[in-house]
Length: 82
Image (cartoon, rainbow, N blue to C red; front, side):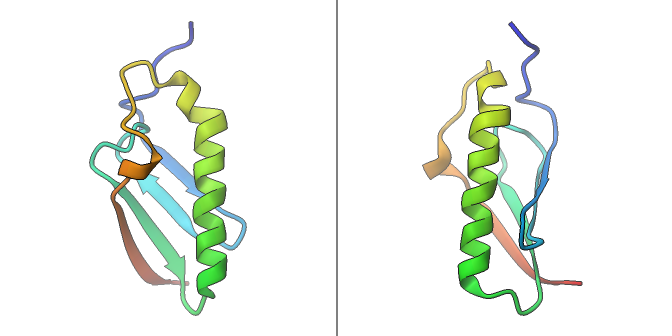
């Protein structure tokens, strides 16, 4: 069994440049989303789906101390990342 990732920090930059970060890989405390200025909403939504897919494949299997689920993520979104 691999080491638990729960308490490690999380960071991911998606295809359209949206930056996701969290204090914990299990997303307790929420996820901060930094969006590049003038990014179309459809690209931001695509980036969110990409980040969740990445997390589901690369991180989720190593969360050994529980995970509330993707429907429980609290996103805090900021714009104007240049």
